[in-house]
Image 1: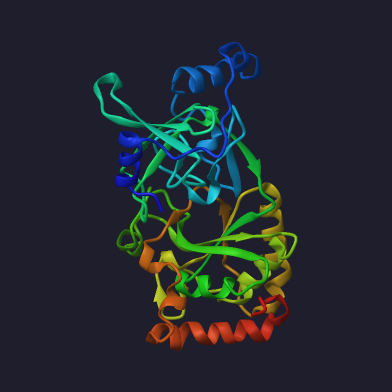
Image 2: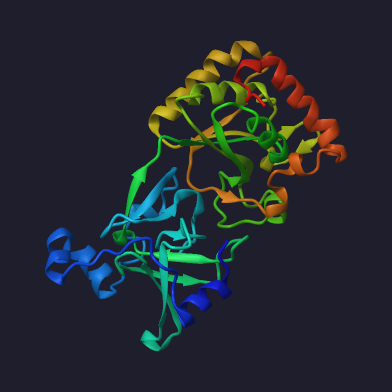
Length: 324
């Protein structure tokens, strides 16, 4: 993982050796790029903040240099910085990015460029989220995204320690992250969410392969691995942050969620009160909340609350579980 010291070393003493080099004349670049792409990548321009929807989309995929096609960033390292430009915590590889001192506009900054073709990308700063603490602030016009076959789903069903531990066991689930969503506060802390004033719920963000496990499967498993009939409560955990919630990304996901709820209602004596609302943002929880059950299996909460849920999951959905 890169650190700020690594970046300063590259900027001062020379950059990583690129895997390849792409060189073209200005005329060749102008012929293949749009005027805005050329202005930004070849003349060190900057696009207007919030001018690209790339700032607000966080679906799986990879981001390539618009000039030469070099892989620069992975969507797993993308986050909402609120700055108006796409932001990443790490490059896809150490050789992808080169760094240069930028003393323009009366500031001292570190410029980031494509290490293959010298395309100007943006700058890197020290105000990113952990664990790297870095924010690669990149012009969207300098990037082209290649979509992945993977998809994301965001559910809340009580304490995210429980839901994370459950969905990690499912075949086709690539990654599960604990965090906060469904509210209005930006970049909330656990302490702030616990007050109930941020509007956020404790949720998990599931990255999955729909060719192996479908969104419909995930919805039904979600409804049957917590109690969707209790309002703002799961067992002893009380508060709006523990509410049952499904955050959809498309109209098709909304329709599917409502249909599944209607079909599964007969399985419950009380009315399902799961909130179904559009996804807006996911804020990853602090590091010590990630992989909580795996890191603390003997902790009393894990033993008394989470382990029985996992045992029930194995009984109900054995055919959907990963094989060791």
